[in-house]
Image (cartoon, rainbow, N blue to C red; front, top):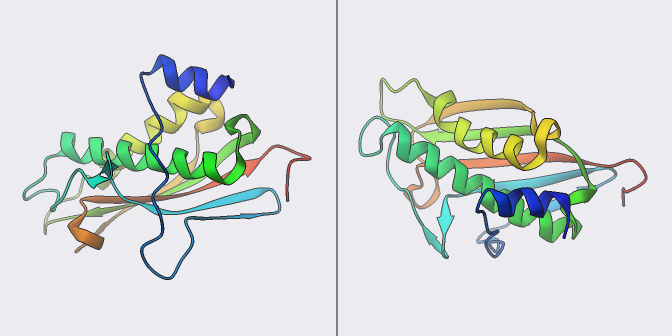
Length: 158
């Protein structure tokens, strides 16, 4: 068992099945030493777990849970892309999108749910650059969507 999976297991995490693409895109692209993960929604047991707008139907705690679920789905895609999470040298960047009601300005607090997960799973290599933005709506009325970029260890590229 890899160190990454051991950390995940200690956190009580189980990676879900990676979601299939539902439109004209692929779930991930591996190029050179980088893995680009398409935007992931807060799916849990194959269903969208958190819907609606932050600052309206959804509170910050539920938004953070949604971002964490997005992070778990990112890890599932990453595992499908590279086959072994120990091959990951670093989480480079997360981009977080938060469905936000007018006047809601705590997008960074919401996306912390995904950011903190990356650090818990990868340690210092999970610290990353980030953007957290508010949007008027997301696919399927999801509350949060997060995409990611990871760097493979040297000598591991495709």
